Amino acid sequence: MENTVISASILSADLCDLGSEIGRAEKAGCKYIHFDVMDGMFVPNISYGIPVLGSVSKRTECVLDVHLMITDPIRYIKAFAENGADIITFHLEACSDAKAVIDEIHSCGKKAGISIKPGTPASALEPYLEFADMILIMTVEPGFGGQGFNYDMLDKISTVKTMLSERGYDVPIEVDGGINEVTAPLAKKAGAEILVAGSYLFNAPDMGTAVRKILDQ
Ligand code: DX5
Ligand code: ZN
Image (cartoon, rainbow, N blue to C red; front, side):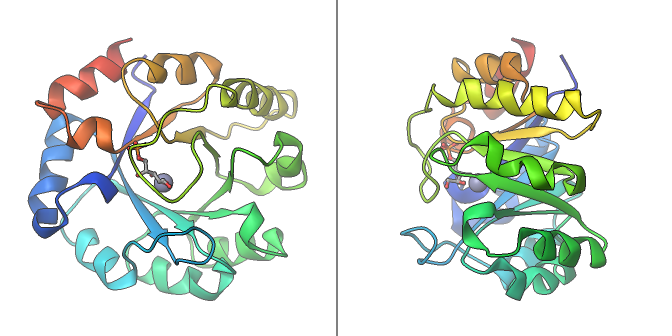
């Protein structure tokens, strides 16, 4: 059970009080901080970026799990790497040469995550599985917190899990979007090990209890 990791998405935190919000997530038992970067092009929203990551990295011992929802991500890999990212995840749909992006992330000494949107089939990941350090399966359309979990993605999680184990790759699957105490056990059962949670955690009356509810099921 405890091989599940929770990645707290600070998109739903009180951004005026980010330091203490991160402290709250750490104290509640989140091992990763999920940092959503949006450019208003790949997704219809704009969040925060490189200088904010630099400040966050000085305030936490958690793994910094950077989710790039930006067009042509190769342009900014080095900057995110130099500002504290541990895992850098990009969208397959946002670039023309995914292998080059993975190589750039690795050349910066960071872990490479590959993400797909709900409409992108699992098979699109196939050529890159051997190079990935993490696969992120979106369970909502990227761009906003607080959306409902897309249950059709459970089959996709299982499919990717099978693709990885058939090839003997020990690569964790992360899921992002609509994770709560109801959907977390389903995602875990399908094969996800890293669960991103934003609104469920930061809006909970007690974040520690919310984390336990996800981990203990
Ligand atoms: C959405 C982001 C998510 C978002 C998840 O595009 O990638 O990380 O913060 O929020 P919840 O957990 O509220 O669905
Ligand atoms: Zn995200």
